[in-house]
Length: 251
Image (cartoon, rainbow, N blue to C red; front, side, top):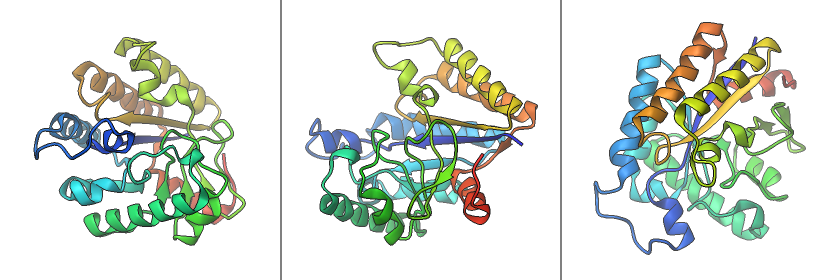
């Protein structure tokens, strides 16, 4: 059976803090994606009766603890997405480990559950990430991989990959700036192909990109409706990783 995972990355202003675009958190209640984007995404998932995976920067566990906790309280899965959206593939091993420890602890304190999945900010993990994540108790990596084939990494971590055409920013941000209907149609085509071969379909969306625009939310919802209509099984990334961990096999 084909499987679809609907995932969401980033929260609040963490990436801007990490890049230096901001030097301090915004005043409470003023960050647009938290005020508008996240409520729109949560409402969408509730309408469709779906659970999703959210990969969140650890910085938010300190500065937006209530928002991090809400993800888990709503029944969704919480994963780690670096500390402040660092380019993970460029970090020295010691720096990456220190940030991973800090982020894991902050998210666990905020949410009351330990994150077990990781997606590298920017998509590409460093050569040191595999063993380090395993040591910290992680069970899977959801960064870029070998196409759309789930597998197990050398350390035993499950890997649930994505590809850039499954990312909302790939389409909506410059230079493409695609119309939502075009993104919807492209994703529905990819979903149907996955369904035909019992494959994997993964979207990576963002509250500040998809969640802020009603037409983009509608486009994503149309893809979810299509998945349900085709009988595609929808899982959190962690649920799929557990299957791989049990069987040792990918799709």
